[in-house]
Image (tube, rainbow, N blue to C red):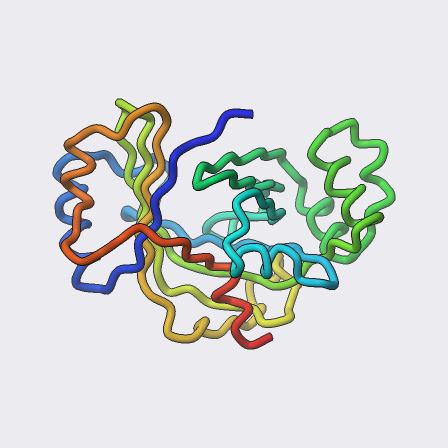
Length: 223
């Protein structure tokens, strides 16, 4: 399993405006954006003991979480993702779902997954059946992504984080979400073997230190 380096910083709107200008000068916008950004909707999973939430809040070094995600309200491309963390490094495994499959999982109809032959679906099935993993909440936000070839660098600015509370009807574009408290703007920097100096300089902000912000945890502030 290959892990990538990850930094996260909580920043404010003024920081974001400054970073946006710097990044536009040295990096490229992600090819999948619309006017430089896209909307992300994710459905996060957790068990009855809220293990994913507690491990994040407790800073457990080795942890994982499952989510289903699509972009710009386009349900023709949906991904099941497993995010793993180990001592500050990150790995993501992903597989494609149809809208019908995603809705079935959200509804708790999972028997069909045993015949899928897909390793990630089979793992999710085992953890839903044996560990009580279930859809927990919707997480919505806006992302501005930038890419830089050397080091396979990806820099993102995430904001307007919204929670679906206990709603899991995530394929419904009219599902109501509300602001997830006073959530900050989140700067994320991800890279493989090295982080080029030009990007390191572009994202440097005085008084900001790398942290461990979780959009899922932020969206659980109401329960």
